[in-house]
Amino acid sequence: MTTQSTTARAAVRPRDAEAFGALYAQVQQFYAHQMQLLDFGECERWAATFTEDATFEVPTLPEPVVGRPALAAATGRTAAQLAASGTRHRHFIGMFDVSEQPDDTVRVRSYAIVYTSPAGGESQVHRVCVCDDVLVRVVGELRVASRVVTRDDLA
Amino acid sequence: MTTQSTTARAAVRPRDAEAFGALYAQVQQFYAHQMQLLDFGECERWAATFTEDATFEVPTLPEPVVGRPALAAATGRTAAQLAASGTRHRHFIGMFDVSEQPDDTVRVRSYAIVYTSPAGGESQVHRVCVCDDVLVRVVGELRVASRVVTRDDLA
Amino acid sequence: MTTQSTTARAAVRPRDAEAFGALYAQVQQFYAHQMQLLDFGECERWAATFTEDATFEVPTLPEPVVGRPALAAATGRTAAQLAASGTRHRHFIGMFDVSEQPDDTVRVRSYAIVYTSPAGGESQVHRVCVCDDVLVRVVGELRVASRVVTRDDLA
Image (cartoon, rainbow over all chains, first blue to last red; front, side, top):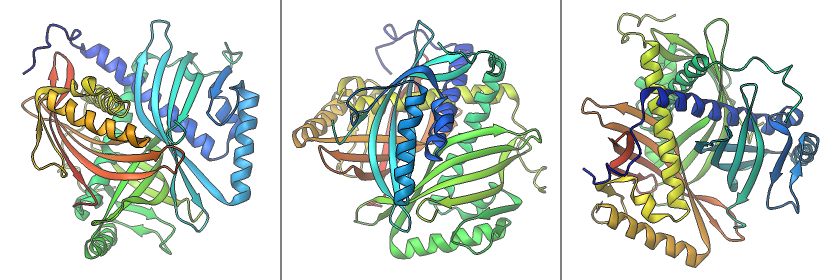
């Protein structure tokens, strides 16, 4: 069917495939839980899903946010603004391109769609973002060591 | 990198990770199939993905829908209205936060975005919902025993 | 809880469940990577995720696109138009209903939401699509052998 057999990498062995499947599920569960913490305003618990010295870059801030206290504070300000305006945000993240690195970190590029719903109004798309993360394992649990977010409307 | 090693729970063992990966995939497959049955108007088959005595709560109904016949009837009415108006709905569900309970049930909190497409018109976001389910295993297959849906625009 | 025990298919054995979990993760990783190649304008690499004689049907083309060169060319035209107009598209695909076939192919029905973001403008939903694929394994890697896309606004 194709002529690329000789250049393709070796066939995936079942055990490797199951190990990747386990990692992939862990990554998905991690992001689902992390984003739900954010959307439900659990700022401290959300910040705890990052390493203590994590960096977070977004295009709307002049420099990266560094460390859990700064992350929790930035998120808390946003949560307070949303609450004051009667608006809900949902971060729907997916499309995970997951690759384990030789240094045991896990690189994940994903898409994150942010939806906004004013109370009593129409829900709509707020932002379309690409999220480039480096995850590390801390006693078996995933943590974000660095995150770089880009926004399609600003690119 | 962090100081939390002593308080974190024990590292995930490979076998446990693969069992969770298997469950996580099963959950995703279950929801994808269930929502596709709904969107393609297969109301009876959709209702059969719930337990016979399942409860379904949504903010727009005064009391929970209980049991497969009532579930199929409610869904059939919506499907008929959509068909009459030439409109398609798609339920895009994801962001699964999955936790097995000591009683062997599986709790899943997810986000569901409903898109609407009038024939010949512009597709757009219709609803942004959070879905809290209790799943049970029936001869190895997942079934919804209870579902509570909230809508961001009504919260 | 239910009366269907006798009619349900046999309980899923752990080993089967883990093999399905591995496949399901592989499928998700495949689509995430494929769609990211498309959205980042890597047209040749995107085309290489199809078999050499793959067919691709969309409602806006009078006949199927066949083969990698034609796929890359069609995608390249769209990428050039988007770049010229300063607009970004993101294909967010998910809701995978995955079934292995007796002939060792894998059928996948999924939903794909396309978001559009004009530079400096508002991101919004562009298209809501259903994607019916037949995947084959080439030396352990998945490839699309045929794809049929439908659009909800044209259905």
